[in-house]
Length: 440
Image (cartoon, rainbow, N blue to C red):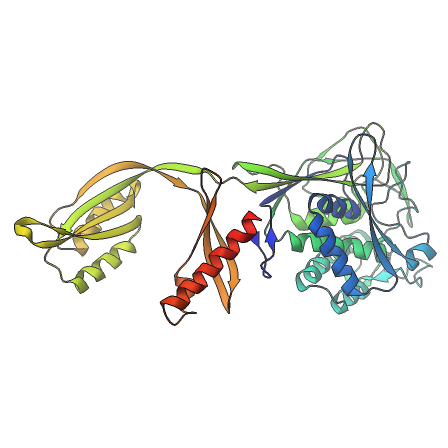
């Protein structure tokens, strides 16, 4: 379970992208919003507070007769008045973007560079820096546009500062990138993987004439990714989709550890594909809390000729020794009813010899008993949350019956408390906050 800096609950550990139809910015937002309805509300709030001029976002229910999911679209007066600027990722039935894909280019190379939706890389950075956006959303957006800008600069052989965007310069595409950034902010801490990408194929019309699919900038962004050919032509991975993938750096396979599938989302593109749903599917997984068995060495010995202070120092040194898992002391009665201290040390099996030497070096005991035992432990996760004026670590585990429990790291609350009662109050608040959110 992950928590962001605002202590907002996140449900997932890992997200897998399955680009059955392909991937574009709008499909990415729609798929994740379908899986996480609360993300839809977050994105709507962010765009509303950003107060972009005459910009609206719209979600729509989609059903292609096979699958259901969501579509996502950005509307603006700029988009309606400039039909040559396609919403990135909006595909027509013949595989060409609805208003024909336009590439970014040097601002001196095209006669339409005065149109308002032809924005330079520098102007887009200024818009994003000045907009009222959550800081992490702003950072993600700037980074994604930097990835696009650097790819276009490499294609055209110019400095990135001289790049003038066509397709990704309109409000629709700018908001697509911000929407993707909102998803990444909301899912902060998640890891990512993907299924191989559909290659597509054919030619698309651009400002520079016909170009092969994937277009040059997208091809540069997709270096290192795995593709397959499903026989369906057209642009299947848009430049924004490619930039998102490049930014995420997903693995080609799922993690090896067991995970529980929690949520599924379908994000639709607008193009109809023959015999195939044009969707990006997302699968959201949460780590499965499980038991783990291993072997450890248990040491036992008694000490009756060290003062309490001396023994305390020695045992603290033992606790810090390599391979030592825990040190436990209990009072006991030895020979002639003398009060003694019985000590138990738990250590990893491969450190047994060294720990035995450490015991004999740090204490006055003349001998130590040891045996190898098996143990069953619960996997645990350390969650860091804001509590009071600072952050505290909380150890969270899931019991075999499904119950989740939490235990605060006492060192993190000692400095924030003046006495036991304050310490217990802070610890209890942190633990209760975690469990309340987990069990909602």
